[in-house]
Structure formats: structure tokens, C-alpha cells
Amino acid sequence: AQEHMKNAEKLSVAGQLAAGIAHEIRNPITSIKGFVQLMKAGFGEKQRYFDIMTSEIERIEMILSELLILAKPQTIKYERKDIRVLLSQVMTLLDSQANLNNVQFTTEFKPGVTHLYCDENQLKQVFINFIKNAIESMPKGGTINIQVKCVNDHEMSIRLVDEGCGIPKEVLSKLGQPFYTTKDNGTGLGFMVSKKIIENHSGHIHVESEVNKGTMIDITLPISP
Ligand code: ADP
Ligand code: MG
Image (cartoon, rainbow, N blue to C red):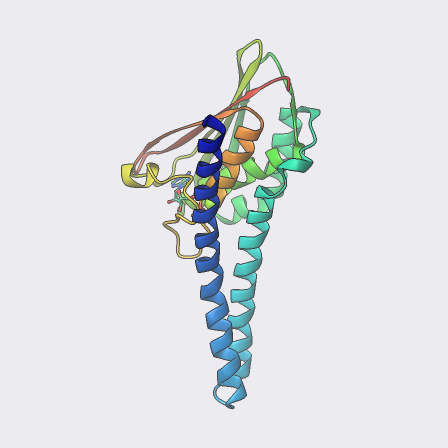
């Protein structure tokens, strides 16, 4: 019965996700179809239509690439990695986006355990998602502080602290629901995908936030598999 319950639960989550995907992808497709029909009828400026269609197609691509991460856990590959190296690679990757938005990174690496077993690419995806959210929460710029420390002899904690707009209570309770976003061009998938990856690593995410002050995302991960 226990197993049966689990399957039923899984199905409803899959169903929820499927409904979300169908909805999110139908919107840009409807728009593309509309522009194709306008062009076929000989209306308007083609160049502008092409631009809009391209951005709608890019939106579908973005949604699909985030969803594909969810489909990958079967191919999870655990390797021993230095978290400091992994985080500095992520910071390098996001450097230009941070600069463009007047955002600085500061780091505090506490002495102690530095390596953990993880799927490097998936874990990078998590930090990219959270750091992007942090950058997007600070339209006027600010600092993102990244702290790494040992919790005990088998877990480490990675904290991302921003000085952004913060997350109101009603949003906080919806974090991790597929397609929930407060942004004009957000996908609302980043948090859910990240949570899933951390859970696959047997880790936990804890969020603390204060409106107009900032947000702290605390990720606890086991050091060995
Ligand atoms: P998206 O970034 O596409 O909106 P996410 O799943 O990454 O989707 O985040 C969902 C929502 O959570 C965001 O739209 C935003 O409202 C809120 N959020 C997440 N991280 C932060 C943060 N660091 N500061 C403020 N709000 C955040
Ligand atoms: Mg996001």
C-alpha cells in the first residue's frame, strides 16, 4: 500500500508538471502560429515578426533545456570534486552578467573539508540558477556572498547571501512549484530543478529571506555518497 501511495503521488506530480509544460509551451507556439498566419496573409513588417518569433522560440528552448535536467538523474555521475574550484568556475561563467548588473562576488571559504562527491555539471547548474536569481533580485547591484563551511564530519554547507528585493511570504510558500515566477520573462523552473538536484544528492535547501533586505539560500550536502 505504501508503494502504491508513492506511485499515486508521483503520478499527480507528473500530471501537474505535464499540465504546466503544455500551458507554458502552448503560449509561445500560439504566438508563432499567429505571426506565420499574418505573414502568409501578407500583413505587416516581416523583420519585426521574425524577431518576435525568434524570441518565442528561444523561450521554448529555455523551458525545454531546464526540463531536460529533470530527465537526467539516471545518468548521474558522482565524482570527488573541490567545491572551491566548482564555485569559482561558476563565478567565472556568470562574471559578465554580474558586471553588467553591478554585482560583486565575495567568498568565505572556512578551513576544513573542501571536497565532496557530486555530479559536477548538475551541481554547477544549481549554483548558476541560485546566483542568477540573486543577480536578478538586485536591479541596482550589490554583493553576493558565498560561504562554504563544514557542518560536521559528513556534511558541508554552501550559503549564498544576496542583498536583493527579498522573497515575500506568499512567494516563499510557492518556491519550487513548477512554473511559479514573479518575473516577466522567468520560467519558474530554476528553483524546482535545483531542489530536485540537491535532493538527488541527498542534500537539503533552506531559505531565509527578508523583503528589501535580501535572501540567504543554505545548501547542505553530504561529503561522501
Ligand atoms: P524564475 O527565476 O524563472 O522566476 P525560479 O524558480 O528560479 O524562477 O524562482 C522563482 C521565484 O522565486 C522568482 O520568480 C522570484 O520571485 C523568487 N526568487 C528566487 N530567488 C530569489 C532571490 N534570491 N531573491 C528574490 N526572489 C527570489
Ligand atoms: Mg531563476
